[in-house]
Image (cartoon, rainbow, N blue to C red):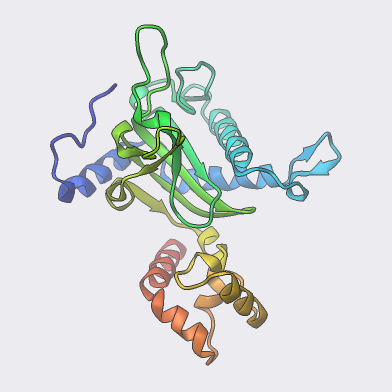
Length: 257
């Protein structure tokens, strides 16, 4: 396993390392977003057997994530055939950099409501032993959160194998990321897609709250940002999520400049 650039570095200095890693990464964030949107749109306009459109099928989130990864790799390798290719061998990352393996990248998707990412228990286990050669789990990651057919958050960063925490039970198969990874090792890739995220992503909006907002005509993050009415429950939600909404609005305006 390759040495982590974060080893021995205090958590408070992790953002500096993350910024350096991202500056070195050969795909600009704007292009990652562009490729992701092409892959995402291609996925949902695809058909099964030339008859059934995928957006009419209740696909498991794991299948959506797998298709997205393959379409992303295809678009990237089509653009840069001498630099990138998709996974071919068991030991390959999802995106293989043909010029420098340090930039080979894993992709991780989560289709649950929220911004958490999930791996399986093996993510925190050694991938190599005397008999098998597995995929290296540490390194660059492009991650996607989505819900239904909406992308909700695209991120780029570095995740180490020991950043994954396996479930406590021996029979548990899931692994979650340590909180500091979200804060200091992954950066958000902003874009218009974030404005179209479902309003249920906001704190304080459950099933009943979402239904009420839908009745008012508020379905997306953009809808609630633009809301100028006087409904007290809506205004409370806006106050509760003020920092989150400001982050999205500010970065969206910056992208438009």
